[in-house]
Image (cartoon, rainbow, N blue to C red; front, side):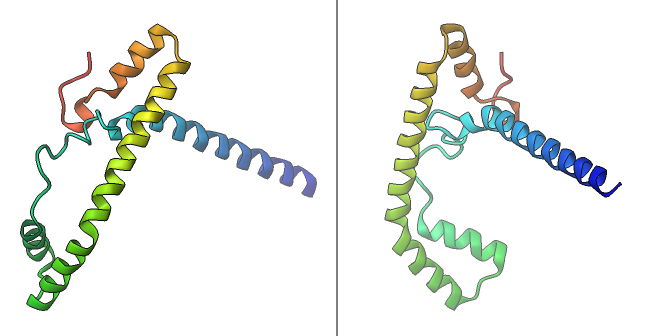
Length: 130
């Protein structure tokens, strides 16, 4: 009786793991391309990034920051802004490199479908997919 319980438990854990892995693959294919350099998330905020004063103002409004906190926040943003811009650019280059490598694996018909998946859709506020 005890052995049968362990078998069922093992099967349950295995099926749960496979279901999670499958969900992860599906979501990465459906949502992942949106975060590449041509995806809608890259276009979510067109134009230059907001000024430090704008960011501090937004956070002050949302978090009710004190004057001291506002000054400290502005210093933190100044310290990290350049590095974050470099990291974002590196991420975009890496995402583009990954998408290029994926496209090389695909047949022409699959490439066309992959490119369509990378276009913005209703999920990200863009026009509906074709």
